[in-house]
Length: 324
Image 1 (tube, helix red, strand yellow):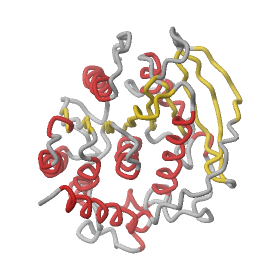
Image 2 (cartoon, rainbow, N blue to C red):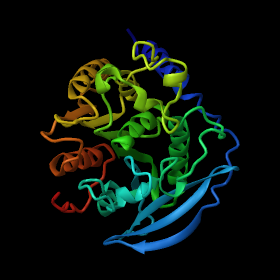
Image 3 (cartoon, helix red, strand yellow):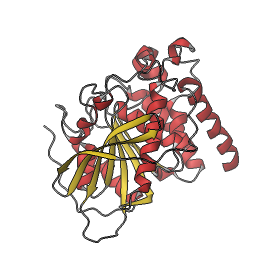
Image 4 (cartoon, rainbow, N blue to C red):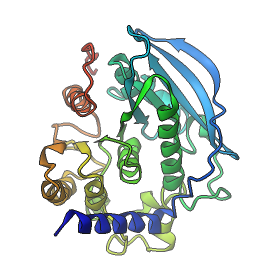
């Protein structure tokens, strides 16, 4: 009934996620980043650094870091956390345009639009391949990724090129729900864009949740909740609502074989009620392109322009290569 009561409900949603993912580790006494650069590459109007940095004293996070060229020295730029989809061998290279599938090069495209971009590897993929999920300090790969992604925001905020108040997150598929999870846990993210990344659990493969229960995601779905969507103590409509009143954009294709569009329609309607309640109805957007599990050219450009508007950025408009 009041914004204060909603904050209580929001805290309950986060607790529900932690029941399935395990608790977010404390963020006190984090180490210096000790960032190491192993490769430098030049793009059309940016420099891409291959880096690793400390997540904790015992963990290093591999990532790409894109720094656009700046005409005015000292000008602060907006920044984006970019999360790749499932790609066990190449990981973050997907968002640099190395995927055989079109429309995945979000990191490269956003850097071309003038954003500082960080694109980490998901645990178990890319340079993180072979990650030991059994003996780490997390109860799920999802929580490890959330922790890493929050550390990426820490790093972005520390950079002299970045305006620390203008940071967002975008991802496709695995990165699509990763972006939602990051947006829920980290309120520093002002805009969240999820592409082909979610549906309500009852609508996911007819309620068959086994793919979510791998070590790389949330094994407690199997071990604690018996893969029963009725028992899972959170769902995506609640998680998206927990992002409100911060901005949210969903690309949800009509023919997505992974994430059923009817579950998206129900979930968006539920989450939009919270956005309306918080007088932020225009800050939740969804597009339903007539395509499969993809991020089509026109919808991707709409998403980028939505990010531009929220983060108050006026890029030199870059023509996106036509998807083939």
